[in-house]
Structures are given as structure tokens and as C-alpha cells.
Length: 77
Image (cartoon, rainbow, N blue to C red):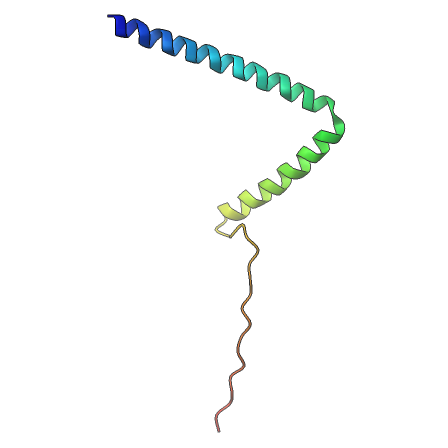
């Protein structure tokens, strides 16, 4: 019975921490929205990251592709 109470208390304290963390995140988001220059930089970076994920999702590589030079073949007579 004691273990059951401990598990409930752990879940309750974990949930309380989660709620506090979410509130902190919302407060930080409000602060970011007030800073126009920072928001501009965040949008630029988010756009770049989105492009990377889109390329990855479509089967492409995130790294720039390197092209191999073709060797010229000699024509046989």
C-alpha cells in the first residue's frame, strides 16, 4: 500500500513539474515575441531547419551532394 501511495505522489510531483515547465516555456515565448530582431533571426533559422527536414523526409541528404567527375574513356579503334 505504501508503494502505491509513493507512485501516486511521484506521478503527482512529476505532473506538477511538467506544468511549471510548460508555464516557463510560455513565458519565454512571450518574451521572444516582444523582441522583433530576435524573432526575425528565429524565423530565419527555423526556415533553414525546416528545409533540412523536408530534404531528409523526401529521401535526400542533408549534407551537400558531391559530384564525382567522370573519367574520359578512350575510344578503341
